[in-house]
Length: 307
Length: 299
Image (cartoon, rainbow over the protein chains, first blue to last red):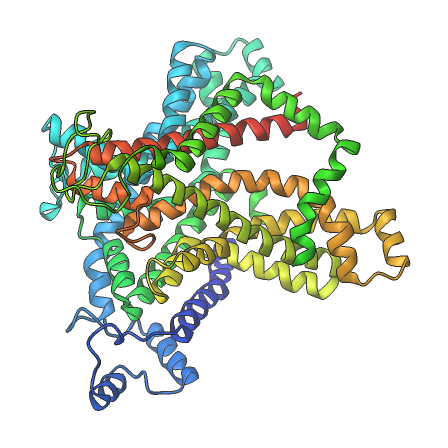
């Protein structure tokens, strides 16, 4: 298992290098520089600015500098947020984003898997129809629609929760963002679990377990459920990627001081080092979460480890 | 390119002769009530997007100073109300719907062109070329594509529709390329391809005239599943302020404005959001039904 983990970890390095090179090349080869938008600068001022940020060196040198900076955890200075390095901005926002994303993943599992099991057990009944319809609806609603709608109902009309904001992480401020992010993932998990459990319940070994006189609960928990959870586990990787991109929207909707906001802001203001730093951080996050999902899968199903 | 643009017409012309499985699939699709309702809803939305704006006296960007932020109603002639600047929401929602549909369909076409060219080349050339091209696809698959789109939209003047199309198309072609390659690998061994080669056609001519027209079926089905994806991406980017820009309306930036103003004018959020959700539900339903109708295990 340990060698499997190591192998998978080293496998991430080439992908990361590709991400870094692609985003660096796209950003540097594109027309238009970071200082184009302001009023025309005097040539001397412009030259000074470019020297300050190292933009006067040839491209390969810039790339080399950037890579060696990355290796030391240095993403360079932000071009727009004066006096801040990209690393400081990321360090400010990332804890908020991480908490948001992990909380949403946990909530999605806690909601989605039991709902899927309940639907499968009540197949064809009212509970099944209700859960299936709710899941279809949650999947069709993008988070930039769900978020404002939830805020409209629970904050503006019912006054149960605050509309937006953060207030140094008071729990009331977390409820709506986490729910918004978790709902579509929970819906996918419910669908996957329902379909897999229905299939497993028809399998001969479940019938023979019942025939041996085992109680319904025991058959479900010991025999049927573990294999029925595999599709849900393998969905955790894509779910993590979904949560990472979804957090961009949720942070914007609810005004959370997370790092997704910096990415969007940086993209609007053409703050290249900030955008690159954020893309790299988010790519690493997605890859690591994907890896975790694969590891859980390999832990449950040893056959998957050989791949 | 000329060959692949001509190709759909060819395959349609040939379709009746060997329509068997496709014809059956279409019948199975229409036999479902859900699929019929979704198809009807989609047709209605497309029709509204195309013709709806001309039914109203207002233009999407014209300001009506008499009626600022007016709630929906018939009295003032603003059926869906107006926004804070007095722009008619009915016209803006429908023209936003039109723009979102246009962008997503064109972006799907862009991704189709890249995917078909890439996959067909890989599958037909085989050996090293195949390995190189498909490895590239594998690596790109691992990248968080939405971030690549964000990077691309950062670079160029914002609001340029061409950039949006290319950025969306550039991330959507990977699966198409895989499907096309797999089909090409099968077709390559078929007798009619060998015959075409034996008559001395250039590889390009064999590909565009004999291989590509024959693999368009499954690819077009996949493309219909791509459209809702593209609608989502487009509105996602526009919602974040990176896609379509004001004063032009798209569903995404209308929802953004609606979310900012929902405290005083909830209809600004509810109407465009309702339109987007309706569109997505119809497309998803249709996609699911289509997949079931084509799934050989289902019947």
